[in-house]
Image (cartoon, rainbow, N blue to C red):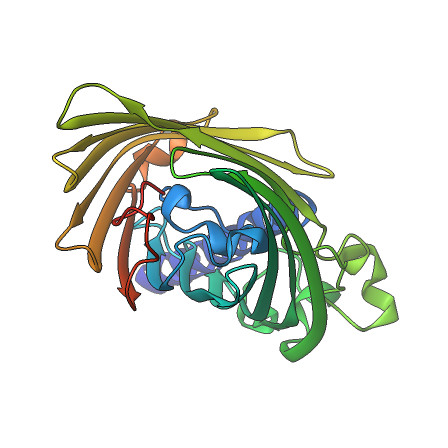
Length: 321
């Protein structure tokens, strides 16, 4: 009797594991067909990851490191790390930069190694910038380690150890010290996730291009306080258009405090402290609005920023974005 119960329990556990594998596979399929690029709550301070035209906007060597841990407490939840650097080089018109990104969710890990080039046209106190982004995308998928509900499912019979693909993107941005408006697609080329012909029905959509429209403005609220609303609209074929809205307040040119809303997805808070004109640290927290809040403690994001070199005469420091 005990043996029968033990066997039944073991079968139930195996079935549960397979069911979880199938649920994750369904989630993975939705992710591959829909939103694929990582998202950031502190996007307004990490724009180079989304738009190459942002390169050189600080008029100094700008280095940013960011780590995001999404849906904390959920097994296989997305984690993203970025390291960006950019600076003007020739008569302040030509600017260069670089972006290293790691994005992992479940069995899938992607690495991006991108170089950024921007050319700026000076228009009085404003600048119109055109940027190009190019490099390589490394895709890894440990699909064979999942436990599918249907034994022998060919989708889960192979791993993708190191699939390397070229990548290209571009962007435009019009900005000054007080405002910015930009449009970009950091990954324009489609890349397939599988190379096996029998898996064409899975890999056919591949990595689709994402389009971003971003903007923000800084309003004076007094001598020591400023208000900066920003927005980010995200579009990709196969998924509904999404957008982020944020409201940030700057106190004494030192401390940013704000709130954000991601359409039908999350609400959150963010803060950044300018330790001095060169060094800053930021943090944000997202709380999911979907049923994920029953299983996750939310999402955390930490960012460090450092500026090198002397500011160009007439350029304010620290920056508003």
